[in-house]
Length: 420
Image 1 (cartoon, rainbow, N blue to C red):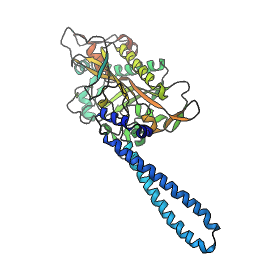
Image 2 (tube, helix red, strand yellow):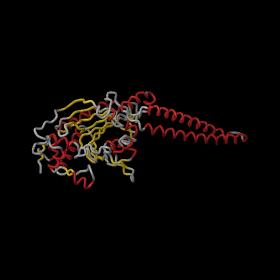
Image 3 (tube, rainbow, N blue to C red):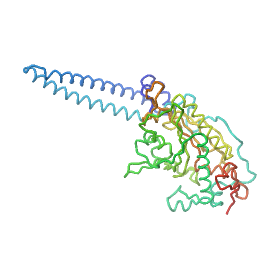
Image 4 (cartoon, rainbow, N blue to C red):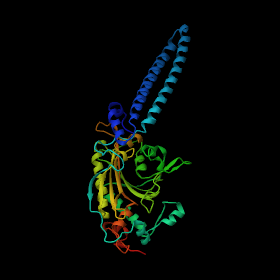
């Protein structure tokens, strides 16, 4: 959540952020009203409790003729305190519930608009030009013996799959290459839980607009994660970190699960938009003053990985209406997909400022030893979807696929994948 002081001291900044996101700015006035009611109820309850305390000291010392009246007053005061505490709890709960629906404030430089209103920051490489009619990733992978969609559907339903043979090698190779790079840059590798408690999922901001995309196990009241960002954000919940030597950086390897509600008919062929995939995700805890510089570093590490798979890509500054609840600013790297003749997202990196850490109570000590809220950031290093960009951009006319040089050591030294 945002800092409540920002709501009180600069409500117009919150309204402007809501407008930029395309969200209801009227929620700001509702929150201000609830905050006033909440703070007044707290003050009233405190005043009555203080009166009750003073009266409690007077009763033992009072003359017998006054004691009965004081006891009656004490009884009436106790009822007033109880009623005031009920009002305090009700007002606080109503404020907290609405306040938690408020998304993070957007970065002032983020482009305003919806999904298609992003700003292209740069292009790297020219779109791949093939001297023949290209095959799409599914046709290529099936020819290589790298995927089995039919049996995936038989076993688990639509948009599930088996990666087989070289398909499995490509995924494992990609993720191992991502972990190797993360280690080189000081990240701690982590294999994270796939199931998390509701308070952790809510703490990361994923139970808002996109809650319909999350698998929930009702009998256990646990959620399947759509990214290791979620368990990594909860890893230090209710802790005070030592950030004096710089950010804490983790690289989480996880299977990810998404219902993809509302996307039927869109990208349902192959492995572009599926219910389960694997990913290596960078996650960082930093001091808020260091967050923007760390965000640029995360983008740089993503581009370092993209260079290793030798595909053309562009970097976009995501528009405010497409940021997601927790993000202050988000950069995506999109690779060129020849058969679609367009760019598709491969990586995403978000600066979530103190939004998640405030919900999860993750803090650090400032130079005076006082606990302060940390900032959190995340960024993709590799996912199953990267296989799509690799095979389509490096395909040969005979259906074989050239393996990018940096990836070869991670797939048994193979230089070319040949059809079966």
